[in-house]
Each structure stands twice: as C-alpha cells, then as structure tokens.
Length: 224
Picture 1 (tube, rainbow, N blue to C red):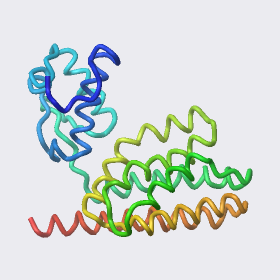
Picture 2: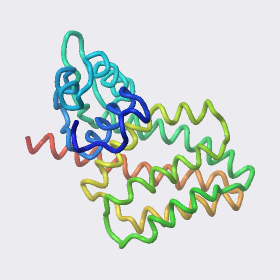
Picture 3: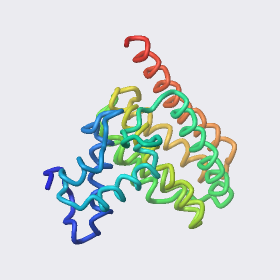
C-alpha cells in the first residue's frame, strides 16, 4: 500500500479511504493535472480490487477532481480560466447570501474567528499554509446557517474550491496578511449588521483571487 496514506482502510472503508488518498495527492500536486488515473493503477497502488478502485475514481469524478470522457481513462482535472470563474462565482453566490443572513442576525461564527486567527498568526506574504484555515473560514460562514441543504450544496464544490485555492497559494498570489484583514472586515460587517458591506468585501476578496489565478493560468498558456 502506498506510503501516502492517512487512515487505515478498515476504519473508514476501502473505497472512501482510497478516494481520500487520491484526493490528497491531487490537491497537493503529487498527481499532476492531466495525469491518467486508471483502475489498474489505483488497484495496484493501494492493493484493492478493481471494483473498489473504480468506485473510488467515480467519487473523484463526481467531486470534479477527475474527468472522464467516453471510453477513456479518468485524468486529473486541469483547471482553466472558465473553471476558475465558475467556481469562484458559485462561491460568491452562496457565500454572499450566507453573509446577508448572518448580518441580519449580527452573528459572526466563533469558528470563523478561530480560523482567521490562524491566518493572522502567519508571517506576512504569500503562504500555502493559509489554504486550510482559509477554507475553514469560508465553510464556517456557510455552516453557521445550520441548513443541511445549503451546506450540502457548498460541500459539493468544496474539492474544486480547495484545488483553486491551492493553485492560488501554490503560485504565491495572495498575501496572508491581506487575507486575514479582509476576513476580519467581513466579520466586523456581520457583527455590525451591515450586510451590504459584508457582501461587498466578499466580492472584492474572492474576485481578487479569481482574477489573479485566471491571469496566471493565461500566462502559463502563453508560455507553452
């Protein structure tokens, strides 16, 4: 079994464990964009049966981390500007609505404050270590609505969100200090009941990440 494992297969189930390990390797870039992920590769890599390998691959296809065309092996998704724009604009739609509801209650979740404190404690400058607390900050805003269906909708794009965020910080496009300051402004606006300001800061915050990643991807395309 590959050394890139985190949890014993018997604990969370074969398919779920294999999918989790593949997900981690995709998100860290160990499995590069456009890399083939075949049933034979997964079965051999993790010592599982082909049906389990196939089921794990299908989980990641459904999550948007692998793509499969007819009669071809699955491949690691290669994000492009159109994908980035769709992911970020989906986030803005969902998160902006959440902020407005939270501002109406003047309720800034403690878990969002805690996640942002982790980012604020990092040295100024771009830092890939912001990805996890940054994601937890935004997820906390959605989870604070206590809506199972809204959370499910947001989590359905979470892997693609993480992939984009990892690309942003892997390319060192955003400063940890700026991220923390913008998060703090969002939380302050929620507490003040200022839904318009919270939404405006969110649009600027996510829009900047979207534009910088799109610009970087276009630069890559020109370079190749």
